[in-house]
Image 1 (cartoon, rainbow, N blue to C red):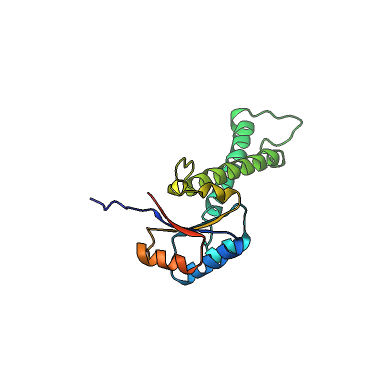
Image 2 (cartoon, rainbow, N blue to C red):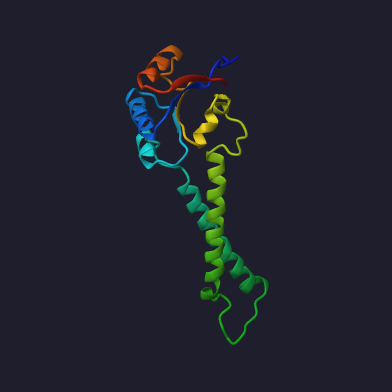
Length: 179
């Protein structure tokens, strides 16, 4: 039987984006890898400091676009050559330039739908509940506060040692995140 966690992790609250950015840099340098930062606005420097790595979205989107293009071309070819061959004005049945608009539209449509679906799956959405919502004052993350949460699933996580580390970053306060 798996051991039940008593905490999702520890969260530190900061008053400025600069303080959070420095805390993220020190957290990476200290060897923590499973952590997240919450801010009321996007911050490119913060994303770089977190060293998130590359995304897994482009390969499925390329495949979806290729399948959409091939499907659109095949649909037009099948309709005009096999299913309803109608020779108008002596043009060839397989007149590929006429198939380009539909092929392009289905390429874009399936690529966009694939990107949307893969993004939902990779972000584990919809997610109506997340443990950080139990932290007092976390709703201020969308207004004027900056949070850093180190997850208990991190290999280096130890409740007392991680709390001591977070306190060295000079946060407003450090709170335990219930599961």
